[in-house]
Length: 204
Image (tube, rainbow, N blue to C red; front, side, top):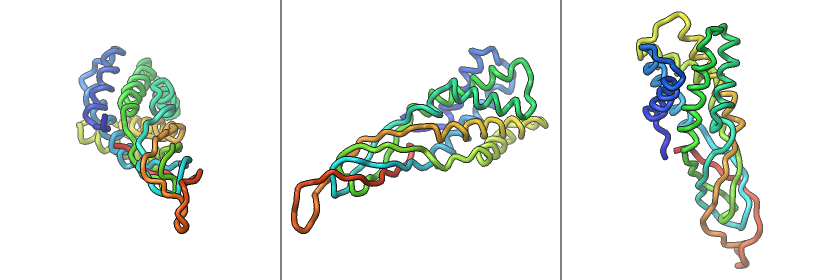
């Protein structure tokens, strides 16, 4: 399923409601975080190593595991960042867990699409890069402000969420399947040979 900010926000909001977070601004927080996370993930880059048969090129398609796809891990990291920002209220952990579970549930459905060089048929494995916690926090803050969340704690909350998510993204492992053409060495024309190459792509 393609990454979608609105859907991510809806999942976060459902988690918040389940945790008893029924405040009038709950939906606004969820929408801002959902859109911010989706924008960041769609702009991120997958970089990996491909192994299989070459020499050739192939299209890689895969999925993510670990890291940002594990709700408990995401929520705990956000909570630690919230504590560091001084959020000590009784609902802080519930909010962090709700955001973590909602984000993880949605991002786990994302699909990796990319290209493998040298390896034309095989598999790839790598990581997600380009999600910077501070930048994500700033984007979430801007989206929160656009949703009318003007409280003095808004920038700190956005920063905690952004930094928490930014910390778990590098722990995410991408696995892809590569299909394409492996033509061997030319000239002379030889059968495909075991090869190692690069696998790069984006999340959709």
